[in-house]
Length: 419
Length: 124
Image (cartoon, rainbow over all chains, first blue to last red; front, side, top):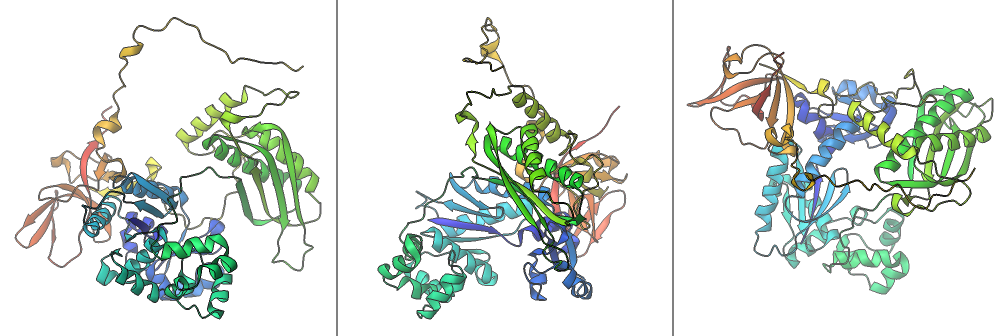
């Protein structure tokens, strides 16, 4: 059996743990730079706040319904997520962390367990220990566990947040209930194609001939069909290192000077360097891009992008910065108003399998230097030790006007209780 | 100039005779945190819990995994604020005992947020 465990309205729930006055009140969380809505509490969904809606369109509605608006606090969400995942891992040796707020658990050899009460125990433990409410769906396959989870979430009254698809009757009933556009892994294009072939729900989908599904939706679609039929096809996936790492941002205003962009790009390079070192990887290629504001049709538009190959795989912030600044100078055009920039590092190779270059010696001092910088920054908060090109005056802060405290990662931000 | 390095540095010192008997240094986390995932820190603010050993400014170690029990010292959320009190059941009421005792009537909202297991105080 598999379980899909999903945190309910995760970002809003994290905020509520440390600010219980938000319980029962509509809560929305905004994207970086307070651009648009990326998370909503049930109350916010009920008053019709759409996912991805731009914040400035909704200010009036938010005022009218006394909606609590928050900037995204990823330090908090990340810590709460790792707490939840670590607790889940106590209940089975096989777990796949699927996203910041979802995990698949596999229960092999749990025949003697009453999975429903085991699920309730998982739910109780996570909620008691972290304050984050979760929903649990269990079924013989991953795709069906996803369906079970939808049922647990949709009918909290009957399921109490835990649903086990334990027999064929329940499987059929569930698939008949699930609309085709709600099926995990079926996007808009496939939905259209399937609907035009009279497929309305997930059960109709499983009744299609295998050849048709393979023909129209490739082997990926066929695997999904088999998984939904209850044949274990999709396995737990082991965490894999990322193939590329990116750091891109929109600016709070538009910039015209090369110096400003140089500062931004240096900062991005240092973020990418840190991420590379965290996953013990080096990169071979670095891509730099800058672009003007596409929403300002009155201004000339420009998008510049360039790839710079490094002389050997590296994760040193110094190398990455140098390379990306060379790239930036090549693509920078005077006279444009830049609104967005970013870098992406690619061609990642693990530290252990680094290909040396015959003619360019590796600078062996970089590794220990970066390690020391990372340790200092981890102990004292990010970016205590920075490079000269980076933002030293901190004038580039993201717009995060509604940020909650870092309750679990900064000692000065912990909650206070009158005693 | 291009230098060619074939081997990394190799340390060839005499092994320390104590190497096989090293023990890990005492860790405060290990002794005062029973459940890492359920443990949160809270700052005490005020003087009403002195009789329970909690002073103004103490760092409280709060374990949320412990079920509340009669007589526990807990961080509670009541009347829109966090407060540290000893939770005592009395007939159909719950008392939050400190210098100033709060009586929580049945039906009104009391949220026991987490159990205080230790208080860390600055001595000098």
